Structures are given as C-alpha cells and as structure tokens.
Length: 251
Image (tube, rainbow, N blue to C red):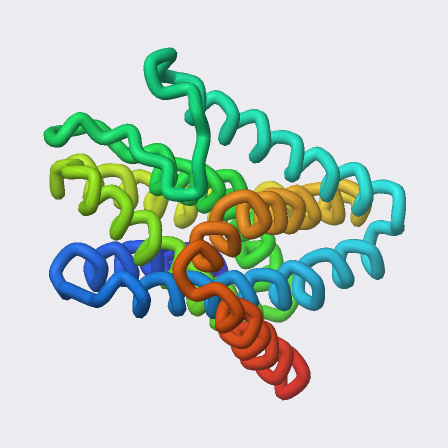
C-alpha cells in the first residue's frame, strides 16, 4: 500500500505541472494574468523551500549537509540554465523574456529554463514525498499540497512561453509527461530506497530541491513577472508566500 501512496504523491506533484500546462495551452489567459500567477507561484515556492524543505532538512540532517545540498542545487540549476541560454550561438544574448523558438518545434529559452528548474527540483521533491509516506504511513498533505500548488504556476508560465514562441503542443506535452513520469518514479524510489538512509543523505536530497527552486525563482520567475507587473510583483509574491505559510502552520 505504501508504495502506491508514494506513487500517488509523485503523480499529484508532477501532474500539477501538467494541469498548469493545460491551462496555458488551451485557455487564452491575458499575459498579465499569467505573470501574476507566476509571481504568486514564486511566493509559494519560496515559502515551501523555506519551511517544508530547508528547515526540515536542517532539523533532520544538520546544517552542513543542508548547506551543501542547498548550494549544490542552486549551482546545478544555474549551470543548466546557462547551457540552455547558450545552446544557440546566434542567440547568446540573454534577456528576461528569453526566446529561442523557431516557430515550429523548438522550446523557448525562458520556458525551458523553468522546465529545467521543475525537473531539477522535482526529482528530489518527489523523493521527499515518497520518504514522507514511509515516515508517516500516509500522504503528507501539507507537503504534497504545497508542491502541487507551486507546480501549477511553473507549468503554466513555462508553457505560456513555449506557446508564445511557436512550440508544438506534442513537444510540450511530451516534456511535461516525461517530468511527471520522472516524479512518480522518484517518489517510489524515495519510498523503497531510503528506508535505511542516514539523515544526512536525506538532508542533502531535500536541500538540493530547495537550492534549485530558489535559483529558478530568482533567475527566471520573479524577473519575468516584474518586467510587466512592476510594483505589483511584490504583492503577488507576498500573497503566494502567505498562503503556503498558512498551509504549513495549519498542517
């Protein structure tokens, strides 16, 4: 039973990316609405990584493993983002509204950057969800809900960038489908493989997700939202943070 609950938690977390992607692809939401959701999601992510990931990692495994994983996750995301940004030598110049679509099948730079962040943080996040099933004997509602809520804006904002740059629906669907499948697998692995793992290893895995999340939020989500929302960006980020914080306290 536990392994199925772990798989379900990964499906909920990863599937939320698909939900956001579906909304962005089939609903013609105004650009300002998409950016507001992106800023709101950034606040949720910051709160989630602070209270559900970093704090718990430090409590369970200590400061050193947590700090190492946190920094490592940020570095991995930044390097991956740099690679995406420099894949095409003719479009090396980076700007907040990154575009690298060719009008047909290519994925835009800005959307790809968020998708990479979703994958880098989604794998350890899902491992953590699988581990929480092992530790509690059931779904950890606060963790699963916070991750799902934060993943919807990630899928929405990234897919909106893909759609704007002319990426094919099939390409985008395969991308998010692959990330969702990886999330389910990671949750199952977390449940099965970490039953006897030392707390230091768990802290590293958890904080890697947090570091990648924060780097992605700082490099991509908030700057892109601020380009159009300006001063209102801070309000939306604060509201997202507050929602996730209240969920954490009630949980």
